[in-house]
Length: 151
Image: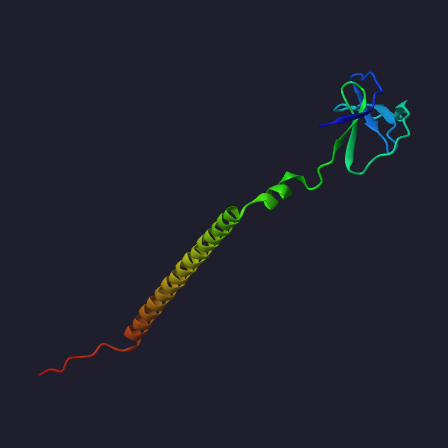
């Protein structure tokens, strides 16, 4: 949960962005909406000067009541924690799942390889029969028709 570190009571207005600098001073700047452009002379306004120091382990913000609050920063997130908390059974399941996926992948690759070989073999067979047909046609043209001997 968040903890309030300074009761500022800043009145927040619509269309303004409130933020904190490194010394936890509160600034506000006019928000730019779609299609609008930032005006040249617009600079952030200092709303409250606090001169406090930040702690690296916390995130600081201006809450809805206009006070400065902080919350513990979660470094690494819940995903990292979740992996550490897994038991031995869960790890085995993950390993088994990975092995199963790898087997499927290798089976698919082998199937593709066999199909590719069969395709090549079929193409080679077609070439061979075409060559034989050509060869037969050439022989027929070269050799004259044999005459039967008259008896």
